[in-house]
View (cartoon, rainbow, N blue to C red):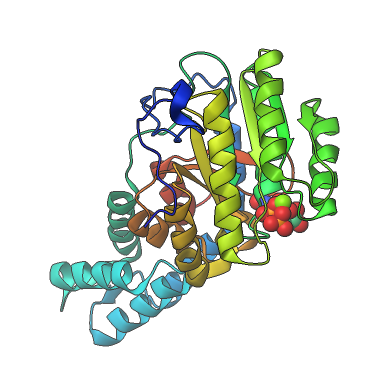
Length: 343
Ligand SMILES: Nc1nc2c(ncn2[C@@H]2O[C@H](COP(=O)(O)OP(=O)(O)OP(=O)(O)O)[C@@H](O)[C@H]2O)c(=O)[nH]1
Ligand SMILES: [Mg+2]
């Protein structure tokens, strides 16, 4: 259950601190001018290790072009699917579908891949999910996630993404717990030419968040992105800190934060997914950024993520550069997992 709720209640003069509000805007088609084709070429590169598992390992269990679908084949197929971290349930469903259609018959390699592809597409299907922008004034985005998941790097990527749409971005370094975290975001802000609001080490992160929103309002910025700590002395402290950040933001802009992005590390495997689940619910996350896809042969982890989180995957990150971010597209993702390189 969420530790803090975002109701539709608005601030009134006697209210004291505002109750953060549920985002009301609909996600609408993205007006991104980014070259999504070339971004997806890079995502394909990021998925190469997982694709190699699916294609090469499955190819290896085919003795010739066609393979008899017997128990041994089905068991080996299941083991390969599980290796990608897609989870036992989807892997068993794919195995069972192939068994019911082909049992005792010969299946061809491409037919087996088509079964996998169709099943994964069904699971991953979601409407296009661009960012939910504020109706007017700055759109406030809070970025959360367990430590080391890729929050700060993803903020740099988001900044670059929004700037490529001609938007002005203000950053807030509200991870004051570690001095190095502030430094890291300052370096990115200089590289990207984005305004940044910082605080002293160990100063109140909510104060940084407050000043970041104030700066975005003053400067008529389009987007305001606030970084947060992934770890404090205790999980309770972390949740209290996030709650306070929510309060100060919604006091300035009633609908803020408009988005709360959860950054998930694709290399952290299924344990990472369970760990982040509690985090996501407590922080009322609205969308997922899946980072570090380039470093893993377990890109299938996107499947349990889509199954277990009720929030959409908005972006995937696959590198340490500001350009290494693409808007999530289920069909392109599955194609990257399975389809051979077209030269
Ligand atoms: N290969 C690769 N590395 C990444 C990606 N995203 C982040 N990293 C690296 O992962 C490490 C952690 O990333 P950060 O952005 O600092 O993660 P964080 O969540 O802000 O970490 P804390 O502030 O410590 O909680 C850094 O070395 C990043 O360069 C990615 O998509 N691919
Ligand atoms: Mg960080």
